[in-house]
Length: 539
Image (cartoon, rainbow, N blue to C red):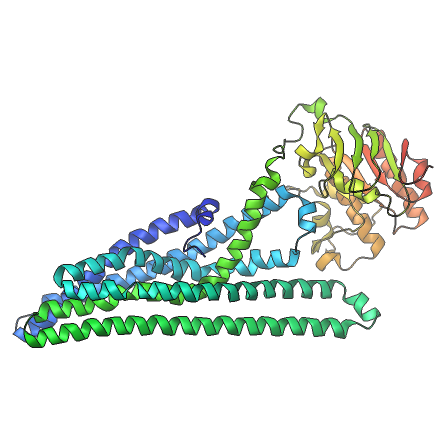
């Protein structure tokens, strides 16, 4: 693991600012350490010589207070930098996931990604508040203090220069082993999060088949794995701390013994000997603290590496051949209002599809289960890759952001915790109450917009949740009628009467100029369709 990953400085501006601030604080702290050692030496030797040392004691107190202020300032700056960096990395992660698309996200451990962006980035506090300041102090204070020791007593400086490299050598060796254990711990935590999320989501089904106990046992087993990996990390941490302290203590002891013998023989003055002895532990302190804080910061560093992998993938070869997203309607209002032209679109090994969905028409996509109806809509909204062409307003849909040119409702409502109105107006920065009510009415959803829903829309029946999802698509389409309305089985959970009302609403929307692409297995959908695209069989 690099001491400071260059990608952190590239993706988070707050990290660059904090690194510069840490360097400035480190320079001042180094000067304060030298001043403190010199003033303490002067006070001790002056008192032994019978001189008045009140001035030195006052200066010593002021320097000690200044050192405490600098340590507090470093901690405060580290905490703020960790919070800002976490926000910047989360924002960058969301942008990267949006660029990679829902197809990429569907193939990833989404619960693990959430843990990384949440708990993982919160662990950056130790990295910024403790690890980076000590790393900067090691780079600044250690060579300066060694040079000062060498200047006043070259023999003590030589002992320090010879023994000091042993500490980072052991730190590297232990760090390699710790990195492996830490990575296993982090992956186990992600697996635990994913397993728990899957179990909670499918708990009703598990209970129906009497398998909830087995699912709980698996979660318990994964929890035990995480506990064992955590204990391994702690063992390596204690081993590292013991090694650092032992080596540093032995090095300082060697310097102290050499200074003591030379003081006895008269080859070294008390003033220089005491000054060097006071500087020796300070020279070893930063690198000892780097070893200690390395383990406290390891979890946050592991999380950032996972995030950097996503950011690099979004900016790397995986998307290098993709044209940059084009803003919807950038080629002009008339061009943006064009037809959706699909020619030879093929998803995986499914048969190719070709059709044109004109504004003011409803295009019905039919076919048996597995014929590719849902895959067609997934391809259009960027959820899966496809061969062939699909263009809207003359622009390849792969260069357009799906949120700009589509208004979509899928088979899963995908509702969120909050009110019905908040779910309908999802993505609208300034929702209008009248527009929300109009969308609910058009979707045949006779529901109170202020009704609060639980997690994943808990509190509604399947048909009600489906109508709210359709209302969300209609609300989004009403905000910009140039969008294509994509509906995947919008009436699968509706009774015939409500379904007929929904079909009439969609027909009215199409007659007003909307381009509607409707996927449905209901034969009644043919009554409102202008054209039928049959997949899998001839109809």
